[in-house]
Length: 456
Image (cartoon, rainbow, N blue to C red; front, side):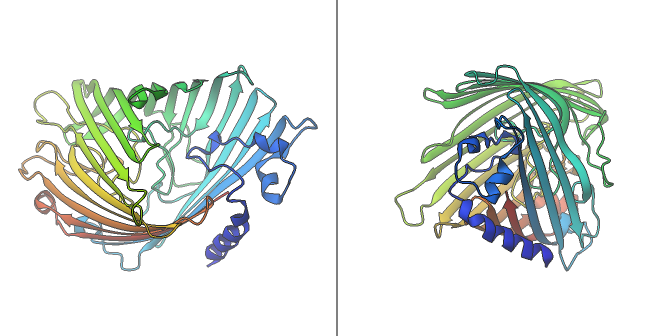
């Protein structure tokens, strides 16, 4: 109840600022409140976002945070494999950060994360991680104030690239991703180039124990060019991954994987599109890797129609291993994808799949919308199994001829009164298909969830 009261108080307090400051960004360290130096109307909230530390106000500190409260109930979790929980469970996440600018060139960003799970029968560190140093890095900007910007960054940080199909902050689950690494970021107008080398931070369940991870490394280069004729926006990237202990349906072993991809997208018109293709090569357990994926996401918003409906269609082809005995791995690895990849229920991960995903959203009121979608899944290859979002093998694929996994129907009401507060209620039904019925108990899943979130 205390959290409910707190959410209400923060919501009421922040309503007056919803039109004054820019929208929050997925990466909170990308927010810039230095413009408040010239603001002549001060209040308590602007003082939190911009507190001068020197007389000339070139040195300042900015504070921010994120509180998320979720309730979930799942019937037949794991398609009937998990023990039944008739009461549901609660997830709570706190994120608090301080952004210190020590002059024109040096900046430090620190963020704490607390993720708590209540009434859940079995938890892992992604659900329940009481207190951690989620981010702590230092920036040095070489040419501050110039048109072209060059930044060197070192420390623990979140990474997010493109549509978050391969590298994301993992917003859906209770604990977000972070990496210990080095980066160089160059920005010139509509062009951006990002080079990085990092070690993945593995979540652990105790306080301040998410240490430097040695077993998983990620590195790469990501180039973005906006305002391109015809295609509008294009991205080109290379991502390298090394895991000492990788597990697929084909076996276990050391994985060295290289991903080369491209993405073309446009999100600023009534008709939007997002097209992406990735090929992967390398070695797994001393055997060659040959994997790939291609995705399409198109939608159109009918702005002049009642309820302003937006109709969308997604399709993905994601390669799977054809034969565990052929000496080659064809299972695509999505690296560090969005946690809620196929909806908030997050039942299936993007491995060895072919899925078709139509959707429809309606604007019921100015701040209230309704969303519904249907996702139909098949295994791409009968020689490979079904994986969770985190890459864990749920069911093997060998000796099961059925490809059809099932269909997922979802509906959600989303209330977003301003830029600070967000509420969503969701219902999902997963109709288990022939593959799930042969591989396990194959019961249908019912999932309901409510999310309330406040940002400041």
